[in-house]
Length: 377
Image (cartoon, rainbow, N blue to C red; front, side, top):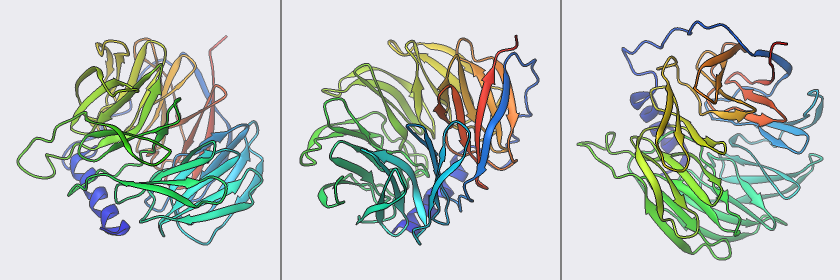
């Protein structure tokens, strides 16, 4: 299946399955008394997304963001001064990732582009199909997954292909942008359609373990879709992942043995602090589970059907965005609202990113906002 048809099908699936189903009214903005100040530290225009799902990336003291028209721009993190911008002449589709002194993007023409931190194009490499997730690098290797459920390892020096792995194909896929993660032992873990979580050897692409965190159920392909949503979370020897219409669970990174799992459904990823894991359910509720046991800690359900992003941990808070461009700030302790801030009115479709105690969000129309927080004195 080529990139464009897969994209169209997966987008249709998200609209049917998800977050703003026909006849379901989004929750009104909840009323609360703010206890934390939220302000724009700086903002910029990264360019419209063009239907793709872009997450900005923080790299040292740079914030980099891409647009659907192919522009990649990096800004100085403190004040937002533009450092460099590149227009490679192709449509960027896979968001922004980083490697060893490199900024990485994927394109809808089945390419991976690597830039030096000064904006100079280092190399471009061809893969099998449209890239819908951010490439990720560590040391001498860059890993990227493509829209046809393949994983490619590229040499970080010149983009030469080292190996490829192909996950089992599925009839329908969720419109999402999960990247791979590179483990402390130098291998790579990714979540795939069909509810599979897979660990690969980065030396040769061989399979180290493969587990099914969710089992397809239902009478049709839409009901049976259990894609692993979002980039898996690595922390403290665990890897945690959540599947759409499936389960959330944490597993031992060495052998893939289950530590705990429970029923859940999400179209985004997971974040954690020392005590809890946090994610956004498919209906827009933000939830916290105990990281060690999977016990429910709290559930914030006042943002239902607002197409809420996955959260990010910033200080004592969780930060999410929604379909109207609002940034919502919740207490990590109990999920209570502590602040809210408007952006440009267009949707925030990917999780915010943490940057030195601030949150970075990118909107569909290209607004790049760095949001700072302050407790009232």
